[in-house]
View 1 (cartoon, rainbow, N blue to C red):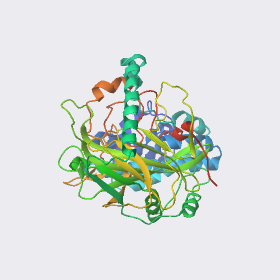
View 2 (cartoon, rainbow, N blue to C red; view 1 turned 45 degrees about the horizontal axis):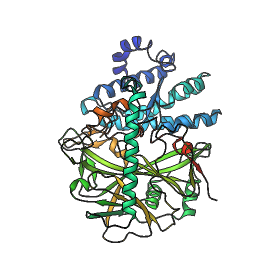
View 3 (tube, helix red, strand yellow; view 1 turned 90 degrees about the vertical axis):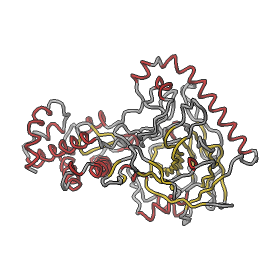
View 4 (cartoon, helix red, strand yellow; view 1 turned 60 degrees about the vertical axis):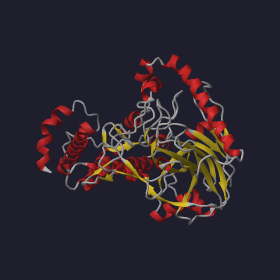
Length: 488
């Protein structure tokens, strides 16, 4: 440890004026262990930033080098009012930081690797948290800093005269809604698709019944609602609600696969094995936590359809999310593309739409509803060729016709993928965008305040509305838009 303390000594003298408390106090602590840990986090962060491998899924909490927050975790703070609950909640923020640091440390170039860093992050984070829990100003500091900044740029909206330019954008949004509804109506008319359709169903067909799901969800932490699952339990839970994908297929750009690093400076798609990425997420409703299951299918590109196609570009995909009631019933479904575009909701009879506070903002586009699923049923998703627009949803008891099985991977793997020549790299840049996925639309849509509109982006950075402000991971996204009925 002494080898790097000398390196940061000069840096620390100047940094204390800018580093916020309690970190600034830790850097000058009388306890050598606390001081060394605070300095070690500074060295680690400097190395990560110098290498350009900062993971942006969760947001650092200023003054707390060992904590990172998400919109969900920030929404839990009002429930963490006692010392015991605050400790439990802070531990979740610390675990979130450790997950991000694991990816960052793995992605560091070999020449910049830091020996024993995972163990140091664990030990030093625990030590600093113990110090901060005794600090009387802790609740006030966290209330001030734990919230996650939104993904919109006020500067871009001001420069783009948002108040005026939003008017033609509102017309464009209304036109897209009309076109999407027309696509759903055509699909539901029973007409055969004009293109060949490939069907993909989960390879894992082992499912829980509703009572088993309810028992699993009941094991969530009673204070925060966070669920701890074994790998086998998670696999079975995701398999229970996994959708069947139907993809109109006219080229390789319509074939799903796994993301890989090749020789290019951007990730590529390996289509040899159809793959769906999974994520466990949460939302808040009426002071309780609801579990969400997220499924993402990736495609190699959205190909050019015409000579001037501002929507075309590298990589494309579809994200499908299921929000569960405590008894295991699906309450509401929603979807977007990995750019945050084309956000749509599909409520069941257990979710009634609430009126929009501002009728001029994008609120909740619902092109269709879905019935409550029976235990033997799966949701069926129909996607258009080339654009990968979702054009129909339905339910089916079993996968009929020719079906290919899809494998599943954790979305967390995308934060650190192996490179061909050795080492690792996230598919996401330090700006949370996927390199090589820029769209021409960014030059026209920037007045709406979304940086690089149309580019694929990391979880936590999906702004899903041009009009108003809305994020796919907003902790109150469902609560504000729907009145839910929880079945017994």
